[in-house]
Amino acid sequence: MSLFGAALPSRTRSTKSSPADVRRNNRQLIFSLLFPTNQYSRADLGRLTGLSRVAVSDVVGQMLDEGLLRETGQAPSGGKGKRGTLLSIDIDRLNIISLDLTQDHMLHGAVTNLLGQALRHAEITLGADDRVSMEMISELIEKMMGMTEGTVIGIGIASPGVVDGGVVKRSTWLDWHDMDLATPLQERYGINVTVTNDATAAMLTERFFGQGDRNMIFIRIESGIGSAVLINDMPVKGEMHAAGEIGHISIDLNGPQCPCGKRGCLETTISGSALRKQLAGASENERKNILSTAGKHLGQALSMPVGLLDMADVCVYGQPDIINTTFIDAAQAYLDASTASTFHKHTTIRRCECGPDITVQGEAIAVLVHYLSQ
Ligand SMILES: [Zn+2]
Image 1 (cartoon, protein in one colour):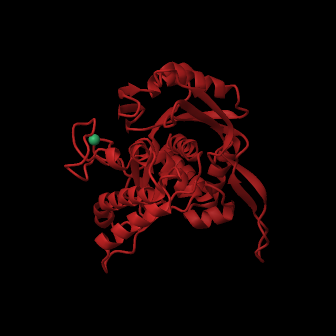
Image 2 (cartoon, rainbow, N blue to C red):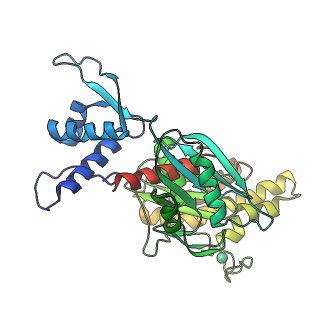
Image 3 (cartoon, rainbow, N blue to C red):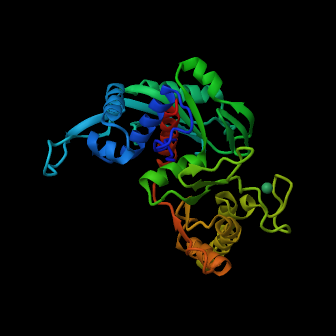
């Protein structure tokens, strides 16, 4: 399986699939091989997928018409036979509108190409109450509609909290319960709306444009804390769509009181807002102590899932005043001491280096995954 949902065609026809299913699977398969920046000829794609020459030509032809792929020139001559035309993802014809609800005091959005790269940015500042409303989301979408040059294949919204389908079930940060974003926006604009947890969205950028591979734990430390898990290229959703919700897991039952009623939750001990309060006015030495204690707490919180899932890669996203060498080294030291064994690969904790567009880019990839699944 790939993140785009495609599976290699099975040699034995054990399950009955409709022609539409086969076509969709072939499309996902070819797209996932070319995404983000690979170039293959039709013959290469046939070899890599096991699909017949006719099937490849058919699907590729349709994807070229649709604006998903483009022809980019001739493959270098491989000796015998004529040279094939290379294909790649087309970044000029189709656009995605991507919104990021995680920023302080504003809504941020971008019109992106099919690689999720921002072509145009837009923002709306929040009012005095700092609350995000449906009207503001619509206003930002309309602003961006006016900036698109290509056909918009979908609107994506990255939101903190528990997301189920197009609904934000619960977000402490936004103070939302059962907020259905997709239905009203879809009705209004007639375009598919995808809603994704912010940590999962950011992880998709790390997967395709950062250092991440098919397996990783991704942690987001901002005003709140979020995380996401990728196993064999599938983001883990969980029974109640709440996988990755680690902010309110307590690491110290006698720790500081949390608004959720428990004590010592990760969000009250190592979130950006909690740490900035402690860091205000601290000396250089005290800063180091605060950040290394916070890193140690993260290492402690991660030791169980890392051991349980045999994860070798942990990527931490956050502002560099907090997620710096002191923090990462302390987390690594704790993890090394608590998980070192002969049957697990050494686990590396590293800082995410994808930059501030990570959320809008990842959300655009989520839109693309959804678009290709239809
Ligand atoms: Zn809590």
